[in-house]
Each structure stands twice: as C-alpha cells, then as structure tokens.
Length: 498
Image (tube, rainbow, N blue to C red; front, side, top):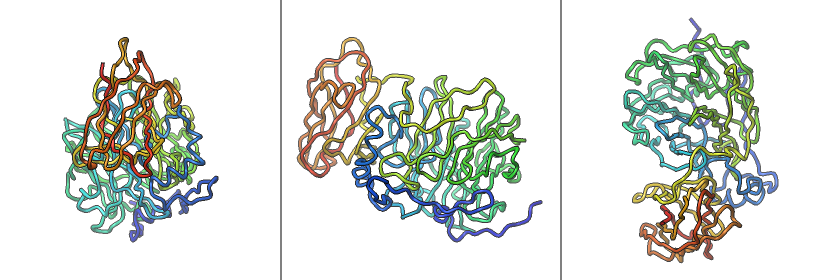
C-alpha cells in the first residue's frame, strides 16, 4: 500500500496555469510574446489579437495552410471519435478573457467533418455552467458511446469537498448533445487519489472499451491513474490504480499529463504529454493493464505552447494525429489552437515521428456538395471572423470586417454547374458584400452578393445573385467587403443553385 501524501488543493487548475508537476519537479509556465511586434498578447481580446498578430504571423500561413484547423476561436485538448461517416472532434475552448498566465475553459466545443478539410462548428454541447459542482474552469475531456448512450468524461475545478480538480461524466442520447451531468457530483474527487502532492492531478481523462466489453478510464497530471468502469459507465469498478511513471522501460522521459488510450491490431497504445515544455511520447503493451514498453518521443516540443495534448483516430482508411500548439495568430501557452497531421503506422505497429506543420491535411477524403445548404461556420480556413452562438440561429459567423474571408475546400460543382448563389445574413449597420472567388483570393471572381442593412442583428434575410458558371471540383473563397470600421454583417448559411 502506498503512503498517503498531503496534497495542495488551495489553487487547483489556476495553480496548474502557473505550475505543472513534471516528474519530480514543478516547472513554471510562461506566455509567448509575438517577436516582431514585441507585444504581449495575453490581455488582448480575440479580434485585437488576430489583427495585430496577423502583421507578423498570418503571412506564414498563406491561403494553402490547413493548420490550425479551427481559426474562429482558440481551442485545445482535441478528442476525435468516429460515428458513421462523420468524424466528431471535441475540444476545449480557451476563453478570450483568461487571466494573464492562466488557463480558462468554460465550455467544450464540437466540430465535425466528413472530408478532413472542412470543419463545421456544432456549438458547445457541454458548459461548466451546466455542472453544479464545477467552479467554472475545465480541462481536457473525452467521449465514448455505449449501448446508444454517449458518455463524456471531463475534468473541472471542483468547488465541493477537498477542492482541486475532479473528473465528472455527462451523458446524452446524441453525440451532438445536449449533455447533462450524469451524477450531479464528481465521479473521481481529489481525496480519492494520493499519488501526487498537488490538487490538479485528476485531470485529462481518457476512456476506452476493450473487446470484452470492459471499460477503462485513465487520467492524471504528475501521476497516471486508471480504473475499471462498470457497465453503466458512471460507476467505478474496483480500486483506483496508478502506473509507475518513473519506470524508464515503460515511460520515455517524465510523464506529465494528457493520456490517450486506444487499441489497434491487438496492441494497446498509451499516448501522453511528457516533460515541460511538453512533447508527445507513447508506450505500447499487449495488455491494457501493462506492462508498458516506452516507444520514445512521437512529436517533439515545437512552437510556443508549453503544453500539448494528442488524440489519435482512424477515419476512412487513414490515420490522423490531432494535437494543439499556439500557431493561431495571437496565440500563446494559454490561447492554443488544434491542428492535425496524417500518418501511416510502421509495419510493426509503431508510429513514425511526427512534426507540426502549417500545411496539415493536403488531400481530403471527400468533397462538399454546394447545392445543399451549408452553414457559414463550415470552414477549411478563415481570416478574421469569429463563431458565436445565436439564440435564433445556433452557431453563426460574426466579427466580419473588410478583407476577412472564409475558404471552403474541395467543392464539387459537377458537370453542369450553378447559376446563382444565395446566403442568409443580417446587418444592423450598412452591410457589405460577399465576393465569391474560385481557387484563390486572386482567382476567378464568380460573382458578388450584396448584403444591405436588415434592421437588427436578429433580423435575418436571404439574398441571392447570379454567378459565372463553374464546373468540377474547386476551392471557394468567400471574401467580405465593406467600408464600415465595425462589423459588416452576420452570416448564417450559403448555397449554390443550379
């Protein structure tokens, strides 16, 4: 039996923003400063960060970049999973008003794709405000399906009991939500784990169901815990166990946090963040409970974020590695951005070493049908715009200014092509226009859709315009134009008409 360790719980996740337990030491986390401007971007709002940082950073992306895959907000801790022909990506939302040198997540966001290049924002299926025992600050989470129910394991500051960070579980009948707290209290609390001396060791849960139906939960910061789950998925089955993270045969370097567990071809994988600033390392085993064999560094420490968090999934016969960094303009260690790389397993099942790229996914696994309604928040890449939730319309695109744009990749117009284009928008001021280009910001101009004043932001109207004919598969750029210094209009959806 291990001895009890007195744990610090006075400043759980906020303390984690300053200090992280890394092996046997506590290491400070520092923000990044945009080098060209010499401006600390931490205390700026999202739009200001984007505008200022674009002066020194945006040009590095160009119009061919795919990473970061979400540009309308800061995101972290990706958790991909496939249902049917759709890849669901659950992420944490790094809030724009986070304190200096501190993390702040009040909600989890869902993005979906069917082609790996265009991502649709599905809103926030779970917020800390829905969790009665949460202190309104969360960390990583992961979802799994069982018997038609969807169970979302999350970690958040716990305002009850001993405090610190606790693991909870939310449940829904749909992967889109809405989700509700399954227990009305934490599943795992700080008093149940004693293998690390701080109060935020119970974060970053990862969940896995083995072939025999047994479910497992792994989690931890400065310790790697695991426990069996009962078939109801909301009860623990037995005592909480922990792995020896100092065992150099099992772990490469110092295990820090962010475990991700899965099985492929009878081999178990434990992917995790190590050292600090963090790299992504991994271990393999023939048994979910070990022994584990360390396989070294999978993704080295790169770019400016002190943390990283991996999620791995197979989709449409390809393998994808999700992670986060600070590459979105204005980003730093506390405003992060999710990215993805495609990879191929080695013949022996090991994973080749991966590096962060701006290019990301260069070839998609499907095309987009322009003749059905497409939400404005379906985006391959964008500049300047922001996604928010509207009471009437759900997720919409706002913060649209002159020169901002949205790119949609691999749009298949077929052999006949469209005759017109329509979109739903609203404007409280003088409006603006959407210029529709093919294959680049300087590509062929297909047409211009004028968006006039509509009265109020919630007074939505549909507008249409004739366009030049276009056939086959192209990338489409919706470029926003207008002379007003404030927001031109809000944007709900678009569609091409044959």
